[in-house]
Length: 242
Ligand code: F6R
Image (tube, rainbow, N blue to C red; front, side, top):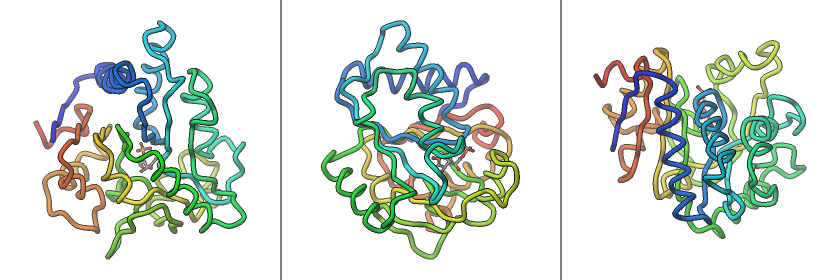
């Protein structure tokens, strides 16, 4: 595991974006696993800057997002469809047909999970999976539990996750109670995992996840079993690694 701590957000963003854009430069047909949330935003901005300088093209890239809320209209500004369009997709040349996000409004959610699993299987392997970490150690929306699910599935969000995400909504009552998420099997199958963590509030959980016991009660701790993980931390999130 390669754990890098950065003094400034700019440095972290440039490092994260350059890992992704170099991959796409050398492998134009790369398969990228994408995350939403606040952690990757600065990296997406840097990717857009690199694209605008004509240094990279996403025309042949395929992307898979980790998760989507259930029942939130696609055009709601906090749906992960809207987030991805706003933060990345509308600024680069990735064809919409190659950007995959689970459909949290599908009439049959179980069938939608199966559809997403099949797409992932057809893609064979994600070359690089971006992850953030939840305050409770979740990755994607794989919440702490006695057991974890390998494939894409419906999950009931923990109260602490809804509370953490309430900052994006008018009130916690508006935060959906369920989501569709890629399972830990698909995440851990990725060739490379890029975990991005910012802020003092995440210092303890990221340290526990990466150095503590490997347990389904802290899903991010499973990253310890993966042979190719790069962790980008800002100074605050990285304070226990100093
Ligand atoms: C987002 C996702 C979540 C977030 C995590 C951290 O697609 O799957 O696991 O990565 O909740 O969120 P932020 O970055 O907002 O702290």
